[in-house]
Image 1: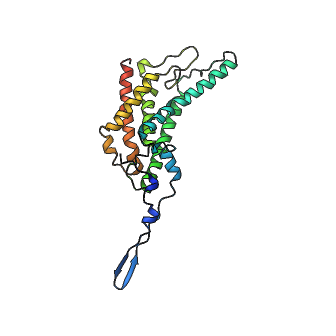
Image 2: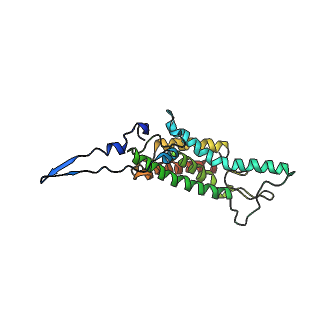
Image 3: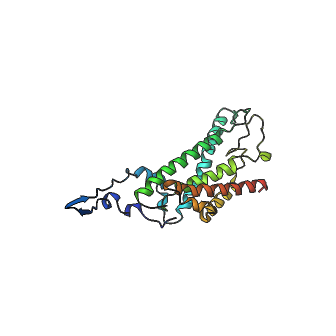
Length: 242
């Protein structure tokens, strides 16, 4: 990734592009018109730096990964916390969902939708920021780490290993993601976090080559690949009974 810079200190394209040159020929001059800068990237900068976390002087990518981890676990933790409180208030009402014939997992589908949303938002925001400040892969852009870490946990623990899939308990459905029956516990959270950071820094094939993709795709794609490698590592750990 590129050397960390503050976009506020970058040359403003609106200023630099305002410099014009005259071309003389056949008794006439032609002035090169300035190219207008991209749209104001304030929102894109806020998103791509994850609210400013990317400006931390040390390990901004690690902070981005922590946000990705929280996104993977907080929704279900909040749900089950509120459901447990409601159940206690109702004197023992069930906090689980009914068994579905398809054993569908609403949390899994919600996390898939969230992963796609973060990925698309990251491509848009990082692309705009990279163009605005004329940097290929700014280090202060950490939305890619958020997306890659979230993908690690989604693929590595959200998709159950078929012979270890959770079985229905009483009137519950075999939820595959972050639930009381989940494969994801503190060991897998820690392992998934470490594996993603290792692969994100190492960038095994084709992650480093993916960086050459244009704009936001190049910024995001290498972290997606690192996330897939880390998810494979989680699958191996789960299969081995770690």
